[in-house]
Image (cartoon, rainbow, N blue to C red; front, side):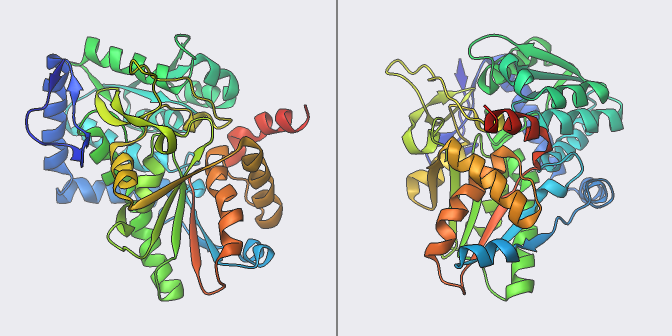
Length: 387
């Protein structure tokens, strides 16, 4: 294994690139192209065109008046990433990376997916740009998210069910990286979360930061001040780093990431290496990743993005856990009180808001990032509630 010699892609002690030499060569080329195009006027004009005309951005920052009244505490705003085309925040990063892939001359795209939202977004973009698409998904997750598997196949993607390990997100990432090592000359790995070796965490943050760029402007327009807290669920951490990015410098804004209590990487993990980068990892004494579980397939991961690991370590962001029971309750509360069915992933953030809001004053503000819509989860929740 080789390490990037220069101090690239680090957030404090976390990040870096610990990959085989031939893969490092590919990642170096990827980073060079990302650095070149992220400030390129034509690239950003095209990206913004698709954001506005295809995704439907800006996504609304919606005042949840009914929920605010019911909890009798802080004013609650919802950043409606669930209203994006394909139903989640994942399309933001996918469009950025697919435009990069196009400029790099790639014609084959691979991706990993947990809940299927990143897979659907990737398959969508590949359909639009005429690229060959293969999605790796844990076998267990293909059962939990059968509807998203069909959506990906309908969009022309090949979905590979990974039956190794637990058959979940970590195992899908393993297989995607194995594919990239074998086929790096022709393949672009469109990684969906803020994890992996450099430059992936920085790229994903860059394209997802549109969330907080918008919400910061929107809350200042609506309230004339910044929020007390920004809440987002955390698995690998893409929606959360996007929701936090433009607020990190605002020291009075609390950044709160919410994890499943059975996959509490940032609360219970220790520094280690996973998938070619250093982060907080749920691991045993030998450094092997521990099994995780979440009713939300997109949060079922034993590591977290290196920047989240850093924000946790320096105390800039808080990370808390909620139980599956609290998540199911939040899923139902937001549905019944606001007429918005959130993804099970996003319901983690809602669950913490239900506890936090009543402890704050009525002139304080919470922004919850509703990272995705719950259509994909309705059948799963139906069975869980009717057991």
